[in-house]
Structure formats: C-alpha cells, structure tokens
Amino acid sequence: MAPKQPNSGLFVGLKKGHVVTPKDLAPRPADRKGKTSKRVHFARSLIREVAGFAPYEKRITELPKVGKDKRALKVAKRKLGTHKRAKRKREEMAGALRKMRTAGGGEKKK
Image (cartoon, rainbow, N blue to C red; front, top):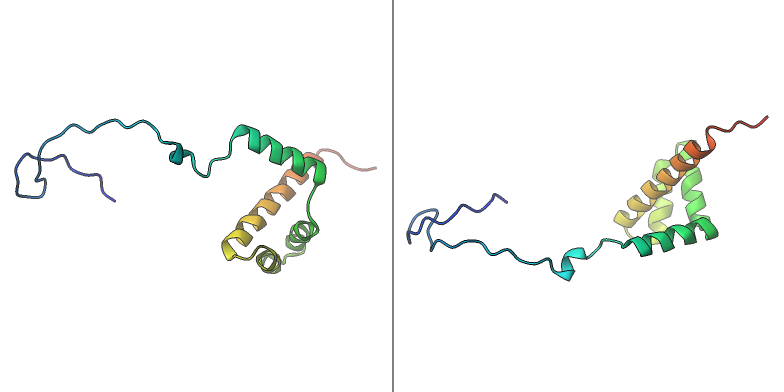
C-alpha cells in the first residue's frame, strides 16, 4: 500500500482532512508474535543436538540426495499435514544436510 499523504487542511480533495502530527506509539507485545526468543532458540537447538532427527526427517534428508525432491515434499506433506509446512521442513532438512556437508567436508577418511 502506498504511504499516506499528509492532510491539506481542506475538507475536499485528495488530501482532505484536519492537519495533525502523527503520534509515536510504543511497541506492543503483539508485535513480537512469531519471533523466537534466544532462550527458546537455544533450547530447541540443544534438543536437536541431543535427540537428532526423527525417522521421517531422516528420510526427507535422504531423498534429495538421489534426486527425489518431489518425493521428499510428498513424504513431508503426508507427515505434517499442509503443503506450506512440508516446504518449510524440506528446506530445513536441506539446510541441515548442507551444514553437515560443510562441517564434515574438511575431514577425509583414509
């Protein structure tokens, strides 16, 4: 949406209305909705580190390795319920796979 033009003080025209100065509002608690706190992020990462991946997550991670991205999406959708959640989970698993490759890429087995 285009930014609102300041009022002209006239009661007719495009910028009609009384001239007022905009009031600065304090941030509301609802503005934080959806943003994870540092504590929650730490707890989730710790649990992921200790518990690892669920079996369906491991399958979603393995499927793109053999070029079956669409099948990975279908498995995720079946387990999670919605297309949007499935896409997000597939991207999360792809990110985890990339992270594992970069972490283990420097070491070579003899």
